[in-house]
Length: 260
Ligand SMILES: [Zn+2]
Image (cartoon, protein in one colour):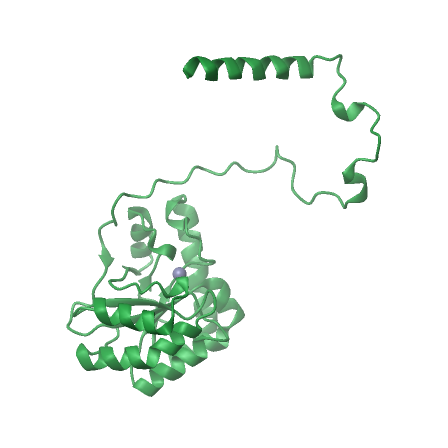
């Protein structure tokens, strides 16, 4: 196997050398039968490859979740968290359901969404809900990037939140996809944010039915559970439809309380 690989490499090398050594005539130098495609297209907007900065390699994800994550409420009651908004279609409806049920939740908001819908962020805060920084544009690999990049992303998101609500408290950070590293936990802590994970994930992002979402939550929610739901990032009709029954059930069985 190894010999074959070596042989293949050697062959490619020979081809490469002969290709470059044909008297300086690259394929582009010979008369083309039709104009090159670039003639019909606008110039490439990409910068010259020599000027493009080289991206540092991503840090490896740890095999298990790092220390320092909040995964339970610390009390009997459960906490509801809504991620990836604010979204003009779903967030107002989720807020209506929460108001009807008389409970408050934690909204893990994405910077680009806050920039587009500052009015929704103001409503979230006005109605007594809590905020959590959920990164600038939901970069699943953010926690694996250089510390300075992580910090810049979190700071930018916090700044956008405070542009909408100047005195907003943002006690939490949640890593997109739950793909945590010790480094992102540390950066969040330095920015006065605790890292918020979850206990119950009904995978509403994979678009199961409302009945499935409700069943998954009710079956797995234990005292102190942090429930992960979504009010943004896609069609959340099923999450919304699950809300009334699910919230009533959780309120009855365990109680719902905002994280503290
Ligand atoms: Zn998310």
